[in-house]
Image (tube, rainbow, N blue to C red; front, side, top):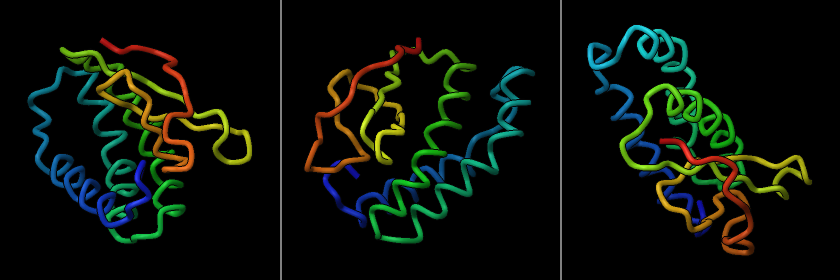
Length: 126
């Protein structure tokens, strides 16, 4: 979405769909398993919508909730490598939105190429 490429976002969302379907609940502890049960359907819903369209703005709307839900799950699993919770203050007329990244460098998925570096790191999850 950073490059305003709806087809690339579709492909990435299909990868997320496959990962959601593949995750084995037995790999998780009791708390993580409970969270996964609660959030799996929500993640699948947004990934399905992103994968089903090429229009960037609609994809971004679903990416907002996908990111919120992924954040909750990432906080529970404590990843081995740092994951950065990043924020764009300008998206949705100043309401802002967050996303997760494995790199510190800001690559804003919400404003696309016009403001690809707009944003900041709000939290490092590790």
